[in-house]
Image 1 (cartoon, helix red, strand yellow):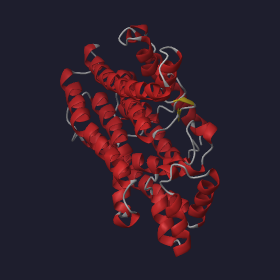
Image 2 (cartoon, helix red, strand yellow):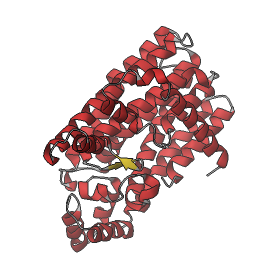
Image 3 (cartoon, helix red, strand yellow):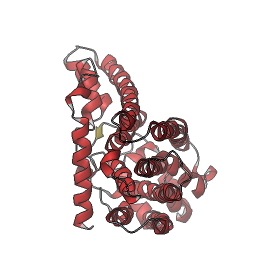
Image 4 (spheres, one colour):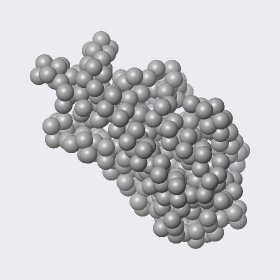
Length: 360
């Protein structure tokens, strides 16, 4: 991984984090436990890949990337509220190396409010839902700041918000719904295309939006069909799918301290990934029976989870998923040929390769 790309990512991470930390924002969220929950994930170290894509897309079409900073903060906040709600759905206890929001709420209810264990769990869940709702509202107000500060026309910002709140949010939630349904669906009823499309809806559509909105801001145009906007939209959409395919690999093969979340949880949750799909296609009847006996078992032992993981590796599930991710990146890269040469185009090219070579 080129050090200049990592440096560039860290630079955008610092800018976005500083934007969030403006004192005026903290005054919006009360009581204190809600404020703590709203800021919990954004105060932890994160990759901030979506904001970087938005700012670089803005620069790649000739704009000043700082024009897109409020929108870059917005796309990170949009991503954050989906994580908060997703952690409730998946019953995860850890995110970015710390407790998930619903676990923070549970601890607060036990230690500060004196709630029973059961009542504390309910409070944690409720607080996480409300936190995500607050963050969703914050994301829209951040987008409005692009017009309020005079950097981007109101017509452009209005079109970006409309696209996010009508198309993106509903596509993403459809993908999340299918993810939940697929975890309870026999693998025989799913095709590889079903799984990949679900992954795109869950993840690719927000990367697509980041590039589209960044280009629209850079050009200050409400026209989503502008050639530069269309090319960057297709580029980021395909790379976003590759990101999720790699994320599924890391969910099995990564190191927990790097990922900041439990490794192997996808096995216990019965997630229907392409890794599972490819492995089961190659499995013997005995291997298939074992894998199906572990997948979706919340109480599966660590030994059996590891055995299932090793089996999926041996059956080619990881290798074929990695090949599929590379296909998506190779499909995406020619889209950048539409753009003029620039340092931003080079950063986006490096970012595309990073999506499938990263280790966290």
